[in-house]
Length: 90
Image: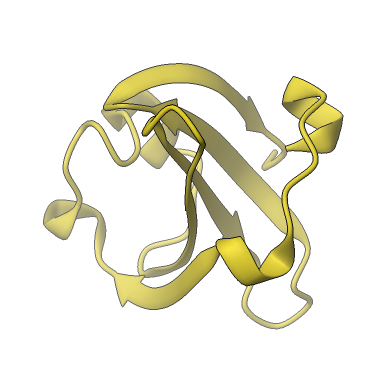
């Protein structure tokens, strides 16, 4: 959050989940279809979530290459609204 939104968050305030998904299992809010086509199928989706002092829910989702852990994609969502994304996959 510091790099993208200039916010510093304590690790203790962030929750983490990681799951494997096939493309057809994912909702458009998680990863838009035009982004999915550039990512592996299945993929490992990591999710970090944080609720700030105002009660806003921040979610960061990342897809990494399974063997190398190289970052392929990240998306930032605040209260259900897409804020930013980066595609690193070729």
